[in-house]
Length: 116
Image (cartoon, rainbow, N blue to C red; front, side, top):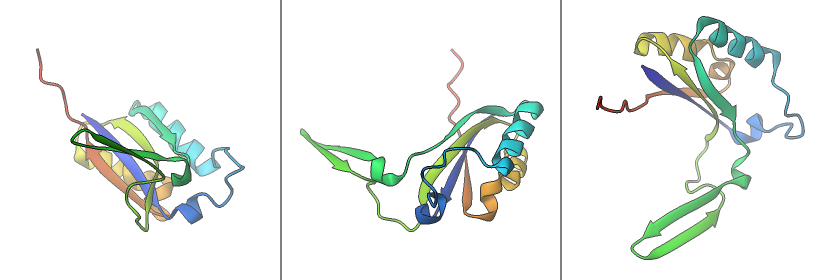
């Protein structure tokens, strides 16, 4: 079963050094562990919300806004997609993520396409 781990946190803290795009040793070790365990499917760090564009269509009107749609305390800063046998296993991986100590890791199962 595929799960998405959504990394939420205070953007001011997450983007403290926007010029440094290198991965921290803690995240590098976490990534390596997921690859070695065969659960890593993909993931990425996101640019700050100041680089976001939000599109909303109402009827025939399309609104395009700079920045995020919602003004919240925590922002989505990155994600992983993992393959895990069940929610308990996905929860174990989320707890091992270095971000879990600095922010929130939300676990969402991906919809599985019905068999044809």
